[in-house]
Image (cartoon, rainbow, N blue to C red; front, side, top):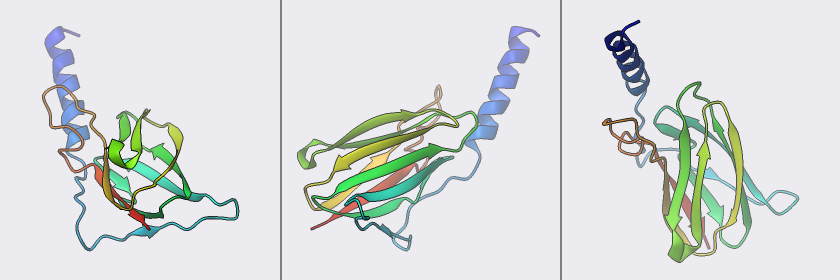
Length: 141
């Protein structure tokens, strides 16, 4: 196969992967409200899909440990989970390769609403965040 043929194959894959299901959060979305389990931990499973987190809006109680199980269901596309709010003590930056899962733990201390997002980007295409891969963490008092 020539270099030009490989380029065509790669571009076809890129178009296929970037054209599937853009999801944008709206005010009518469902909110997953977490409560502490028997061990005192607020737990949720989050699926990392093509340009979306499911669920994309999660509510937790301040001062109680949180555990997110992140699962990337894509067979080819890597994602990540970033929360960059140092003033609130919410700093996470974890990669979740295609088909993998990662568990993160943290304690949200400051009530408010904070974003989490994926900043992965392929070549000159928009980042996953620009394509709508962003969610909200609501921290209740």
